[in-house]
Length: 91
Image 1 (cartoon, rainbow, N blue to C red):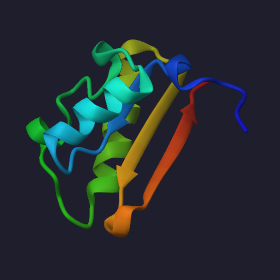
Image 2 (image 1 turned 90 degrees about the vertical axis):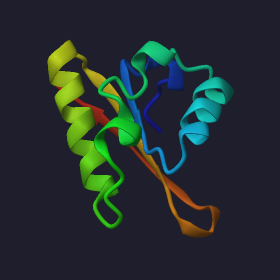
Image 3 (image 1 turned 30 degrees about the vertical axis):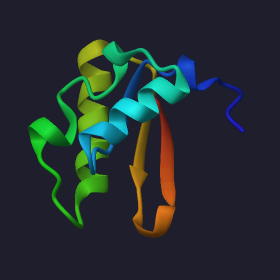
């Protein structure tokens, strides 16, 4: 729908329910590890159950501002094998 490839995102914030999950997603999607969880992700910042989505989005917004990135992606795993993702564009 956006007309972009996953590799076009300049910064990616992956929720780390488990550290191995972020590593596997990074590898499977062919993401540049230098663009993923640039502030350390949940391993460094914590995994506040019930507020992880907010933490991930705000972390992405700060990372985009720090790097003057125009296109970012945040994703979260959900219970039951579901997931959600949001693309963010800055002017």
